[in-house]
Length: 90
Image 1 (cartoon, rainbow, N blue to C red):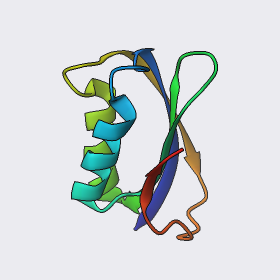
Image 2: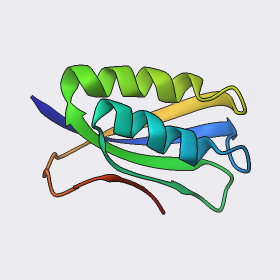
Image 3: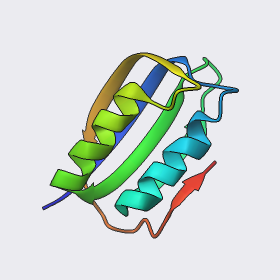
Image 4: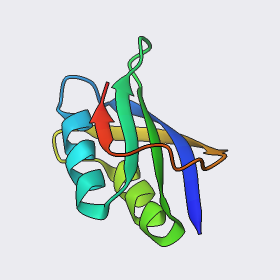
């Protein structure tokens, strides 16, 4: 079953290659979507994949790469539309 979520990641997540590491992980798992910095210091991730794959990706996002410090994630379910074709950094 396909699933799509918006994940807002708070902590030390800008300027530490969080988006690049997120893109690498997403591509390893075949997750489609994007990651972008927000003006308030958070990173927004839109991710779409099969439910089991997406659960693994969400767990990774809650931890992040070694260079980052994730304090909190906020997740919102979105309607899957399968129009995303890759995982990009915006």
